[in-house]
Image (cartoon, one colour):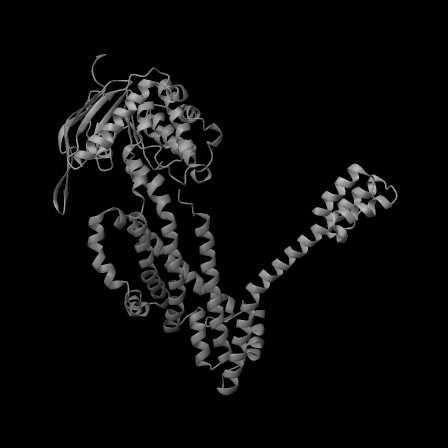
Length: 264
Length: 325
């Protein structure tokens, strides 16, 4: 069991029926993710990376092929896959605490009592460094803090896989860098399996163990997979002078701007 | 500012006499000349001059603030008062040209008399104006409450389930523009009494904004919130209480706000036709008695009560508004 894959995407297609006929978003996607691995999905707009993430999350169904997570086929959304959305999607009428509590109650409420649920919520918020803002409403905190609450909510349910859909895309560069470091710390602490969609090359190389590069849509598929063999914990400043880091970066940029440009 | 700076420089170098703010504009050389020829002065006098300059500046700022506040007040209140004055003048002119049309002074006297004893009771058809207003409000309250009880849940279901939406759409579209008074005969026929018929008319007219606005609110819920519900696999009840209801509440309250305006409008008309008690009935009664002052008073009373009702609901709606994040 130690070598079995935590997340398997097997020959997956996704087609949409539109007024102009059938639209193939992605085809023949094969991916295997090991437990504790950090995988980045990168590609141009319209390459189907968010579509693929939605399939893994169970928010839509594959047109053909199979997705398996933790040994069970994915047939809908579930607490074994925690999702962090690009728009934090916090409910504005609930405090940060209650936003996370909502998720915790759903997953653990049947077997645990309120004090334990509260403890779980507080622990999750502590992990993202938001204990002081626990009882504030989303409109009282900054964009970066909102996104951290989103991460806390996804982590609090102890998912098998953490799915992030361009989680830092809506933030400014400095906040993004700060949150990337936070994410590295959190993932190291929880040893989570992570699939993250991003369009930022530096982010992909800094954070992930493997970069899955997708071809341009329509009918996008996996173009190349790059193993990122950099030592952990990843230090942004040290890596700025690391030749391997720049080699990996170049490889991704080459794929995106040279190879895919020709394909487009 | 320059006065203080120059003064500080001088006091550091030579103990000098304080310069008044008005001489601050003078050139530095003349000030130094003046300083060297004067006697030594104690530091406290110099410091108190700094304080004096500060005080003067503060006085200027306060005066400016008072001026701005006054201007603001004047600009917002005066036009309103001018409008009212013009209205009263127009009214007075009208009363002098049209026979039997009472002027503002006469109406005011009558109003004072009326409102000095608003809660008398001389018989079932002769009550103080206070009782009449309350009777109308009671009917509005009941009809309105029933409309909310039926309309809001219906709005939720129509918004949530597309099939229901399509099913009810033609009926709602046809019935919505019907005048309230057209519903009155049906009410009278079914209930055979004025009071329930009036309540029925309120019900059927105020229900439409509540259904439609609630349905729109449900349909306008951002997909983001529903995604959260899906990803967490929340039960239908949790989706309703934690997501649907709070998200729809502002729309619902807008519907209620629109309804109250309609309801108050309708009750007056319904009461004029059915009689009994109420402000609308009273207005029509006074027409039959040809007491024109009372008719005009009734008009103002209806308008003021309607305004107060709307304001009340706006305050309630604002309590439940949340900023979109």
